[in-house]
Length: 193
Image 1: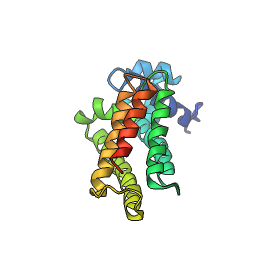
Image 2: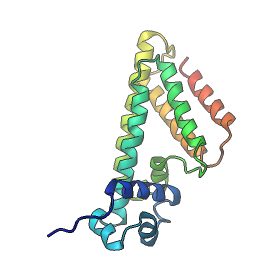
Image 3: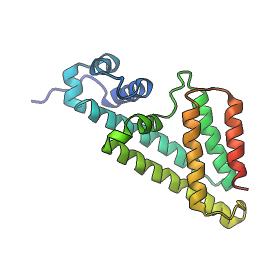
């Protein structure tokens, strides 16, 4: 007869996201996970597998949550430039409110782990493609309505804007000066004119 778990798996996964996000994959030990998650080592292995499996689940959980927020803003009925500005301000605002200056969990994983881990790399590439596509759709809509007058290929503009998002997420690890982010956002929006 299977034993009933005496912990909430979703809550433990949220704690794992926070721990990996704060310390990084390589600096997080199994003992850190046992202590930080508040479950026994055997429960951790039985429920989530090894450290790598837990990291993938944590990354997937974070991706679902953050991508849903991005898509909600991008798919609004607002004009294209207003939508992009709202998204860039949303990202900068969240990063500036993070006193630990952790940046973006996905970008951190990309920098630290993806080069040496095909599963993480595949997950990040898929996430990047989805978000780039969302920017492409809103930019294309803006070009078709005449709101975005830059005649450059919408895909190239989407890649530029999404790369700006990643730059903002990395910059947030070293500064919390709102003026820096306002300048970046303002300059990015000028490209769409």
